[in-house]
Image (cartoon, rainbow, N blue to C red; front, side, top):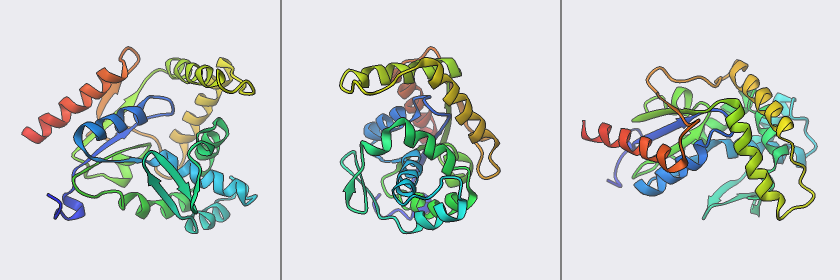
Length: 231
């Protein structure tokens, strides 16, 4: 199994909008299968953080792309390192979420990150989540899932996450209306961008999680993958 060439390494691609739960589902599926996990959204958060550290405007496509070329990124034991520094918490702020959405619209930035994302495809397999995993990065994925939920449902989930964080951070500002507006703006940017827009791949399974818990969503993905493996 470990002698598989990259193109023969199975990939499960899980795409969807912000706060749809795709990251949690993807990570749990990867754990159950013993596969590697790629959080592609984290890469754009890292680029946004690095650009901010270097005082680069997120809307400057060329400068952000040049910045992305110089980064040393490492994922280790659920931690994220940028040029040797642990940035696991720094990239998970709402500000970096917005930054990721803004830098991700730039085709030059996306081009820089393609090879890096491909490098995660190693035996025994990979579960990758993002916006264009099944359409652009891994079009030959064994299983493609488009995981989504109504904007209001996603906003409520994000709101609850932040409320939970606020219990340990009194300075955190939490507003459902602001979160809802932010998600609508992110969705619009992701769907309208010229490079790798957020769309469901033609051969992807649509998984709507408005009324599904995480465990149920994971079970759906696992069942579909087992069907493919047994086909």
